Amino acid sequence: MSNQKNQPSRINYTEIAKSTKFQILMKQKNGFVLPMTIFFFIFYFLLPILTSYVPSINQPAIGAVTWAWIFGFAQFIMTWVLCMLYSSKSKKLDAMVEEIKQDIGKGVEM
Image 1 (spheres, rainbow, N blue to C red):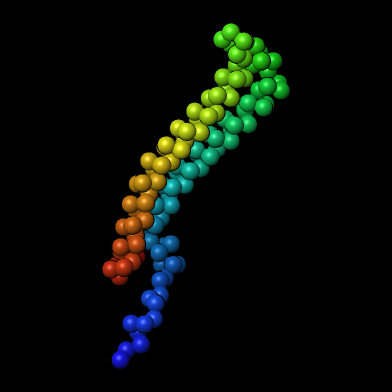
Image 2 (image 1 turned 180 degrees about the vertical axis):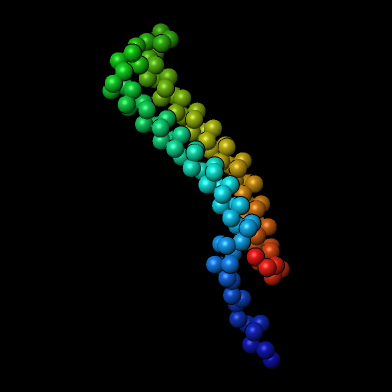
């Protein structure tokens, strides 16, 4: 009896990280996540900065509703939009991950 069947297979993570498919996956992920994160932080911190240094943002825009309230509401919309965009992008990235996992299972040279 061979003892190899009872031992878990060894995965060479260094080889996977150096593979072309993994590099493409990481480039696409970072190409999406980094710009969206920068946009989020700028948009988020712009409200307190504007309310502190731009008095006109506290002026009424529609009735008694000020521009600051409109900007604050826009942050909720922005959050939902970013969540939907990330969800859509993650489906594509997940498919790439599954392809890499299948290649590992088949013993494809990375």
